[in-house]
Length: 154
Ligand SMILES: Cc1cc2nc3c(=O)[nH]c(=O)nc-3n(C[C@H](O)[C@H](O)[C@H](O)COP(=O)(O)OP(=O)(O)OC[C@H]3O[C@@H](n4cnc5c(N)ncnc54)[C@H](O)[C@@H]3O)c2cc1C
View 1: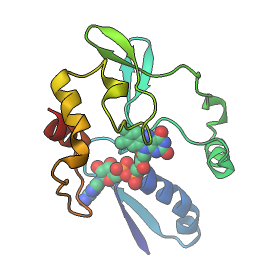
View 2: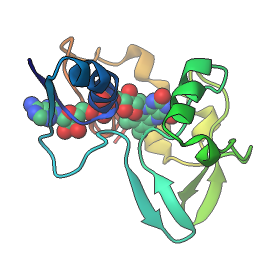
View 3: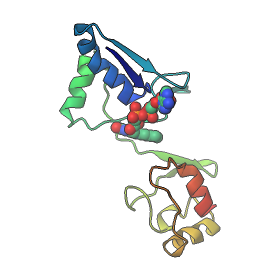
């Protein structure tokens, strides 16, 4: 049997890893097809001044024992690190600013928590968002958050 896995992101690579023993036992072949020029999908690390920086996913909940077990099985147990506890900051207006607090999953519902980061015009748009025209979104559409925020808030 030949097995084709489309996409070498986390899901595709994990599927290939899980299937390899079955494939070996049944004399099958697993092929992973990736459209881009690198594997990893949304897992993407780039070099930065003070060391590598993750641009996509960088964390998992350690209380998920299956995740810890999986990384241990891959021989990566010694590479796992705990979050530093330092909060993220935003570089804006030439200096580091605190991230806004409150809101739903970090998204503020009024401009108050981010007034130090946005213009008065944007603050007005954020405050008027509840009465603004509804977002025209098709279920399943992969929409750019950045584009959406620019459209709504300038
Ligand atoms: C900024 C950001 C931060 C995140 N942070 C976290 C986090 O901290 N913890 C966490 O658990 N999750 C996090 N996530 C979510 C997590 O990254 C994703 O859920 C996960 O990486 C998705 O893996 P995937 O394999 O399903 O998809 P993807 O990583 O998108 O991989 C899909 C792959 O398939 C390829 N592909 C697509 N179509 C084709 C085709 N037709 N032919 C061949 N190849 C194709 C793509 O090029 C891509 O490489 C984050 C996501 C983002 C964007």
